[in-house]
Length: 123
Image (tube, rainbow, N blue to C red; front, side, top):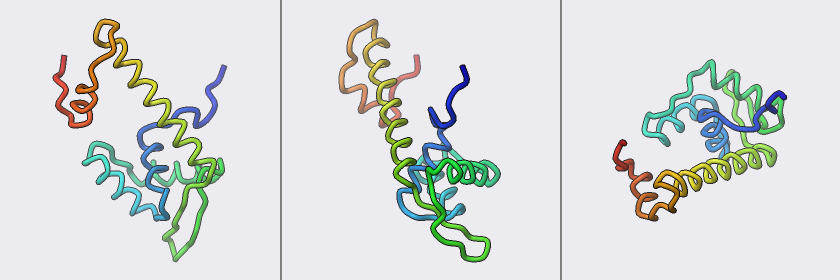
């Protein structure tokens, strides 16, 4: 059975939709993603404009204005639902990790803080 398009989002997709909660253009999106992730995730122009076109066709974002070659976009209710569904999916994965990574016991909340701070020791 084929996977439905946008059933899960790549990191680039997730961050593009996250950026588009406020209207912005392609160059702004690339800069915001880099800043949000401290450079961990980068979206190149080819990937960005391909995804913007796909998101627009799927009704997940809409074009808000065109100024010469500069186009601005904003997330739609359908895009927001997809973003929230991906956030919920990622939280479920994290909860499963907490339950099962420590030998089947719920990991202490302290580890959540270490994960967010990026200080969890590598096993």
